[in-house]
Amino acid sequence: MIKKIILVMMFSISSISFAQTGLDEIIVTPNLKKTTIHESLNTVSIITKDEIRNYGYKSIDEILQHVSSINIGSNGGYGQTKSIFLRGTESNHTKVLIDGVSLNPGTLGVPSIQHVSPQIIERIEISKGGMSTLYGRDAIGGVINIITKNRFDNDEIIIEAGKDQTNKFGLSKSFSNDIHNFTISFIELQSNGYKAKVNSTKNHAYINKNLNLVYLYNEKNNNLKINWYQSIGNTEYDSFGTNLNHDHKDSLVKVALTKKYNNYKDKFIFINKINKIDQKALNATDYTHTKSTELNINRNYYNLFNTDTILGINLTNEQLSELSFGTAFKKGSWIKELYFQSEYQIKKSMFNIGARYINHNIYSNFYSGNINFGHALTDKTKFIFGVSKSFRPPDGTDLYGYGGNSNLQPEESINSEISFKTKLSNDNGLIITFFNNNIRNLIESDGATMQNINKAKIKGLEMTYYNKYGNLDYKFDYTLLNAKDLNNDTDLSRRPKNKLTSKMSYNFKKNNKLGISMVASSKSDNSIYDSNVLGGYTIFNLTYLYDTIGYTWKFNMNNVFNKKYRQAHNYNSEGRSYYISFINNF
Image 1 (cartoon, rainbow, N blue to C red):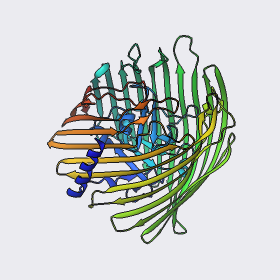
Image 2: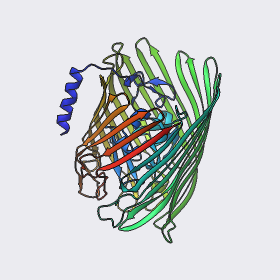
Image 3: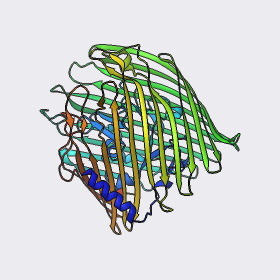
Image 4: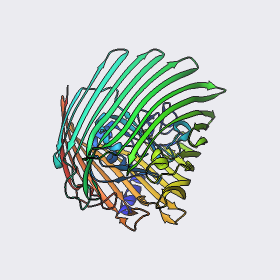
């Protein structure tokens, strides 16, 4: 099935003209400043608010599953744990940000993406490959930056209903004048859910509330932005046949002050965040908590010895506490970091070099960095080569939790890639990337305690293609992956060798739009601890939008052909489902 679709895609590339703006999209994540996908020396994918709207995505994991270089592991439906495997790296090797603030907890390591509502998102920027120079820990696979809306064209009320008594209510409103802008978004989702496991005895309900506040002050050379995000709720789940539930809370505050001068700008950032999970079953006492306070100061020189250079310092105080399976710990740590990154251009060539020094009171000193080179072969085609060194330190649970080992060393990676970006017309283009990632000191259990026992080699090919033909917009995204556990000479778990995604949107009347999205994945191993195989699958989703002045009707049908598939062994995935939404603009 995948091979046939690839042949259709290749035929389309050779026979249809291009007319879209994918490579000219503005991005900020790779270099902490504005550039475009075409000009960036990193490989970046972007999902805009229009894509989220046109294809009716219900969750962040559904959005990310429609990126071929990402595979999602899921322990069931709404609210259940989701794992992110970016370019074949581990689920805790990707740094997930909300407005530049890490969602990764200091204990379990895996960020709770399942609790972030798509309705609050302006865009998602996915920077692939090692990103530790500017983002520090947990960026072996890359960085996913979820950027929330700081302004709405129209105030909105959202009402949605669907399968399994899944209901959503949302309200978004903006207040603004010349220099002040304030936006508030509230989204509540409730669902009776479906059975998380194949043998579960009941459906597993979920409730979640998102509140996002953004204040922006813009006056000449001074900019102040304050973000406050919170997600709270409760998830029921199946634990070895017993139905349990836990409360969750992710909360963050970010205050960013930017002062611009003639030749440079200074940025002062203060961050406070909380990640909590508390078991709520009768007599349950288990919990895992992360609290951190962070100060980041950086200066961006526009022309320092003919370079564009960022110099920065980052100080973090992290407080971790956990009780799980009878093992408890409470630890505090200080992390001190210095970093720089410089870009230098000579005619048609650009060089990017960066380094980061980290001092951690648990795992001592560590260095990471990158070297990137880009050359414009023509005005529309660019060749890029890059090498980066990244790392993930052991999280609190690895070190001190049940089966923990306080002598663990950080996981390290050397990532290299070659990329070609070309605009096949003035408005669109094609990206082809070859990548190779060598990882050592991988942390896994030997059956009793956590150990640095594994090495991995991950290599692959990515191809992204955008097109517009008349009223039809479409995009294909394909990844060929070979992810090996070198110690055991086996494939890494839950990394399919082939994955293809597509998105097609058609405006067939003035106020009507049809969106069809597809995910096709080959089979993969479930886990190194069993011999189960996750079968390959192809699923289609359909969205119909009817827009008029003042309101929008939206109809979604997910998994149109009711394909049975699993993203983790013994855990259910959603069958065919229906949702209808009403959005009132006022």
